[in-house]
Structures are given as C-alpha cells and as structure tokens.
Image 1 (cartoon, helix red, strand yellow):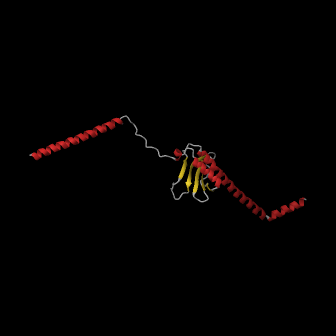
Image 2 (tube, rainbow, N blue to C red; image 1 turned 180 degrees about the vertical axis):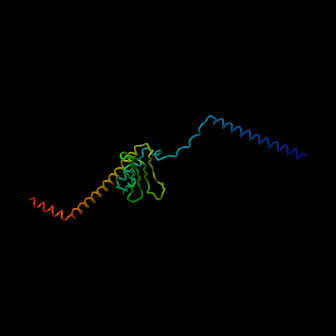
Image 3 (cartoon, one colour; image 1 turned 120 degrees about the vertical axis):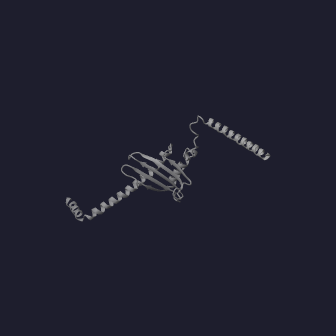
Length: 198
C-alpha cells in the first residue's frame, strides 16, 4: 500500500513537472508569436559578396587590360554566330606563357548597337566550369567598365576583320591576275591594238 501511495505521489510530481514545462514552452511560443504577429516578411538572407563590392573601381580589370596591351598578348576572335540580324563575338586574349587570359563576349541584335555580354579575367581555364582565380563583369554591372571593356574588345574585333578582309582582297587580286593571264588571245589582241595606236 505504501508503494502504491509513493507511486501515486511520484506520478503526480512527474505530471506537475511536465505540466510546468509545457506551460513554459507555451509561454515562450506565445511570446514569439506576439513578437512576429504583424511581421509580413522575414529578414532577407544576406547577398553573396561580388567582385565589385570589394573593388568598386575595377582597378584590377583596368590593370589587366593595360598589361595585355603592353605585352601584346595573343588574341583569338570567334565570329561563328554572326548572321544578318544577330552577331555574337567572343574575344579570347591569352598571355604568351598561357597562364592568364581575358574572355570577353559581345553581341549585336540590330546591326548597329554593340552590347556587352560578359567578361572574365584570371588564370586560364584548367577544366570545364573551373572558376578558380577568376574575376567577372556581368551584363547587369552598372559601371563604366562595361563600356571600356567593350571598346577594348572592339579594337581587336576591328583588327580581326581588317586582317580577314586583306586576305580576301589578296585572294581576289590573285584570282584576277591568274584569270587575266590565262586569256592569251585577248591579251595578244590588246597588245597588238596598243602597238597599232602608236
């Protein structure tokens, strides 16, 4: 009987402790609910830092471009995606030792206004998707650097087309010379007419 009374007292104490804990949790919950009762949105997750947050003057990009000009790095232009209504160029500029590069992409929808798409500088890509030691400028960047990079790349694109056009010109000139030399009868007649005019 005493054991039964002790068990009953122990269970009552246990229930009282659990009830007290439940009341405490309920009170804390009500406080939290009251605190956020009129709050419509929770705090935003902090944004990931970007390059421009750390170096808003883009000094590293400007130094990189100056170094490219001073050392006359190797340039490769890709214009495979150019049509009558849309043009897309990529400019890859690599250091002579192959360690560093600048990758720029530009596009043009109306044939008149060239637009900045993206730019990356840093170590040459060691594998697909490798972004180690790279800095980026995005199309959403609101800084003069986009215009400066566009002009920087456009100089290389113009030079690329000038060289390409010179090769085409030389080829056409060579074809003209070869074809004209092959017209023996006409050439003889022209020479004879020239002699007879004197």
